[in-house]
Image (cartoon, rainbow, N blue to C red):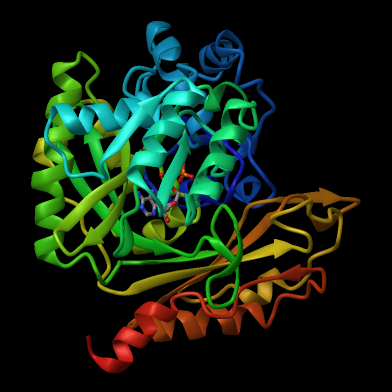
Amino acid sequence: MNVLLLGSGGREHALAWKMSASPLLTRLYASPGNPGIGRVADLVKLDVADHSAVAAFCQEKKIDLVVVGPEGPLVAGIADDLRAWGFRVFGPSKAAARLEGSKGFTKDLCTKFDIPTAVYGRFSDIASAKAYVEKAGAPIVIKADGLAAGKGVTIAMTLDEANAALDACFEGAFGAAGAEVVVEEYLTGEEASFFCLCDGATALPFGTAQDHKRVGDGDTGPNTGGMGAYSPAPVMTPEMTERTMREIIEPTMRGMASLGAPFAGILFAGLMITDQGPKLIEYNTRFGDPECQVLMMRLKDDLLVLLNAAVDGQLAHMSIRWSDETALTVVMAARGYPGTPEKGSVIRGLDKAEGEGVQVFHAGTAINGGALVANGGRVLNVTALGKTVGEAQAKAYAAIEHIDWPQGFYRHDIGWRAVEREKTGN
Ligand SMILES: Nc1ncnc2c1ncn2[C@@H]1O[C@H](COP(=O)(O)OP(=O)(O)O)[C@@H](O)[C@H]1O
Ligand SMILES: [Mg+2]
């Protein structure tokens, strides 16, 4: 079959790499892709906001499946439009993508279907938001309702910080995404990412991961899109997975269906594992980046078979096999990230870094005058499989030693929590 993959990050490189191993694949196109994706796909330039142009391409190239990587096009309704033109799309409808596109929508769904989450209020005017904050007290969490590229959440340790975050939101720091806010209780516990492959009716667990959002070693410094991740997440024991399915995922699937917006695609639950059990922090309606990279390393089955089954509503008949090994990815970023990254520096040695159980996924790279150069904040994802987290970590860092890129940097402690756990045995 012919597949069109939309997106250009490390997530999409991992998806392209995995799909390219499928005997079902005839031709893979990616738009816009990146040089790593270009090793396994034909790169094309489509305006993803122009749904009819994407449809025309699908017509011309006889595309059998469109796989949407990032959230923006999903929230904008690309899956609905392409389906209306008769194309098969892996990714939720616009109505189902509200689970990511509006934090308030998801919170109300939790209330309606009794899904454990932080106590909250939804506000579209600053006076009532501030009154709620005053009453609830700090610490408290302020969230822009809409898509804010990971920058819309403030964990306010004081009332002053909370009020400043509300001012910023309502003054337009996040544009339309901040015209409404969610104010919620501060939860404590360990975070985990939980993925499900969904076909509208059935949700199949699709792996767990933990990521590192802070830019610096020891989880210090500003937040980023993610500086590394590993899978599985040790905190997601079989019991915790079972509770998450029963208390969070299954009511969400039933709830969305009852609202006339059945969820098909990847449902990515951000969880806080609290003393009382798993609580939903948020939903994303696509794979995480870099979580996807570690999931793809561990997936034993044919990804295209699974995506097709999700599109065709056949997941009730499927099971998914995973490697028992741990996968760990270290993000190499360009100097300046998460501020303004330096672009254009030359990267060498990737061929020496890859080997048995080690993949280097491209995120923000480009080719300039025949050389591979940095072209974004997060640039490479050095990803390794190991029998333990410690072994995967050692392999990933050994691979990095081969990469010659003085203008890049990375964290030296990805997976530290899980490695400690392995050492102490709990
Ligand atoms: N209620 C909460 N209590 C404690 N920490 C939270 C809470 N909500 C969010 N966070 C922290 O903020 C991060 C970002 O929040 P999230 O809702 O996932 O928004 P986004 O990923 O869209 O920026 C979470 O990963 C978590 O670390
Ligand atoms: Mg999040």
